Length: 234
Image (cartoon, rainbow, N blue to C red):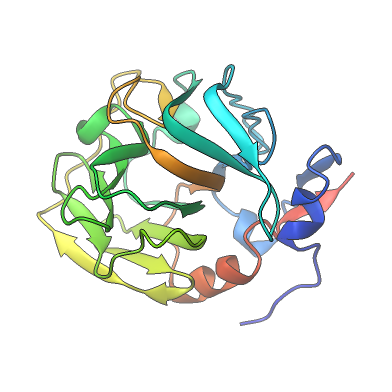
């Protein structure tokens, strides 16, 4: 795996107002349909589609060793209006960084609940992280528990045939569940932090990236080292 010489995550997160853009020649930018850094008081989409979220409700910004992250206290919510650009059939992949300590079942972010795509804590087992696609308990969850309060890097990937994996800090940590169906979105918004107010997430979140393609082990390792390496200063 070749790492390109690009600014690292902390180069942008330590100065979140610095003007940046996607370098569309970067290999990880291929198929990117959403890029919400969530490292300041906005929910700006840095992808070409510009699907920005609305006002932040019940969310604060917390400094970390690698830069600021949005902190959700259980009542946090951001709504991104419905858009076909991020409402994709399989294949799909999503990346994000998060840290939490709770054991309750919460929604980190989702579009159209369990019928679409839904990232949830402790949905299958306490302390694990799941992505359900096209129905409840249909998808993949982490084999290990990760609610240790440390910041971890997650990449979920689904192929067109339903093959799926989750990588944590660049390493495969997958247990599959059920048979994922085609996600249905029903013109639903994308919600960060809860299911439109229910199942509120308690923890930190940043660097949410969505693709309309399936990413693999090399991509997971690259993203763990350079989560937003495809960004460049303007």
